[in-house]
Amino acid sequence: MSAARFPAEALSAFSEAALRAAGADAPSARDATRAMLHASLHGIDSHGFRLLPHYCRAIGEGRVNGRPSPRFRSTRAGSGIVDADDGHGARGTYLAAAHAVELARASGVAAVAVVRSSHFGAAGAYALEIAREGLFGMVVCNSDAFVRLHEGAERFHGTNPIAAAAPTPGRPWLLDMATSAIPFNRVKLAQSLGLSLPEGTASDENGRDTTDPARVAMLAPLGREQGYKGAGLAGLAEVLSAVMTGMRLSPEILPMLGPDWSTPRRMGAFVLAIDPAAFAGAEAFLEGMGRYLSLLRGSRPAEGGRVLAPGDREWEEAARREREGVPIDPDTLASMQEIAAAASIEMPAAMTGTP
Image (cartoon, rainbow, N blue to C red; front, side, top):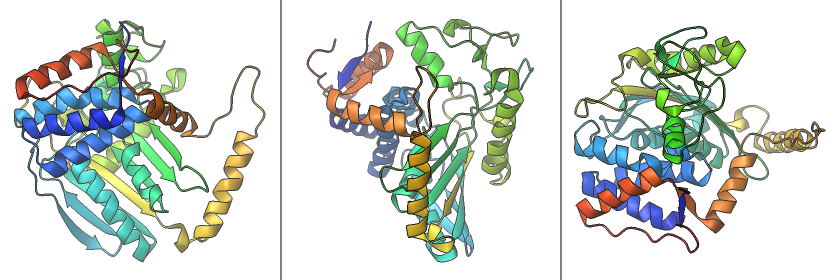
């Protein structure tokens, strides 16, 4: 069964209503929806609206504080901490990004740690907010252990994403990557759509490769035969988001899929902002990014290939989905219908021509 497509605005309205019905306050519903919309528009379906049923359950059963009082505390001229009060990860991380920008405008470079947080979706959503303010942004976090080490046979790191974004004369340069070969939610998405996984991206309970989503017990680190590089990058995210913040290491975080849905997971994240005005200058930075991207996109491709900068594919997909609608996989659609019935919320109408 193919995915149905919906207007982004209609999905956003449904998401906010569903989260409010689950117990979220208006700012939490807004920020969680904003993060899911970013992912769904840019083609990161694993971190888009398919997370809505999960977030509703996490709020409804107490794992995530639906009405948090996040607080920012400055620690030095260019650093600070956001206590997310066990709220949704998007709530605390958007706040951290805003404070990082403010601090960096004064100090040149700023870092803000996020503590007592939870799953925040696609890391690129927050790095992009910093780039839209004219600064370079980087965001990392860790998550519960689901990725084996290179040549390992048990879960150790989380998918531990690293995202970075920079302003350019056009749309921002945007890098958003998991340090696992694929994100965990892609396994669930493939299972919902009846698809196989790429070779070398996931493993069974003994650490052996599998392409069957139903047999996946752990993910492989990025890099396949050179998976030690992916494991090393995961360690970098671990040090910044967990050790630097004093939050839980990946093997210590309660599993995303339960069975405990009432205990806060106490996750960390780390947000960095750099103001180009403190270095080469804002104009020089934009001019340099323009030259860099022009040379990159003009680089000769291999036969049948296409050279793209980080973010190019995502921006193209966002433009297409704004025209044609956001796809929702069958499992997520069924869960949304259950939410709508239980909370007496009207389902968004699918776009013409979709199932």
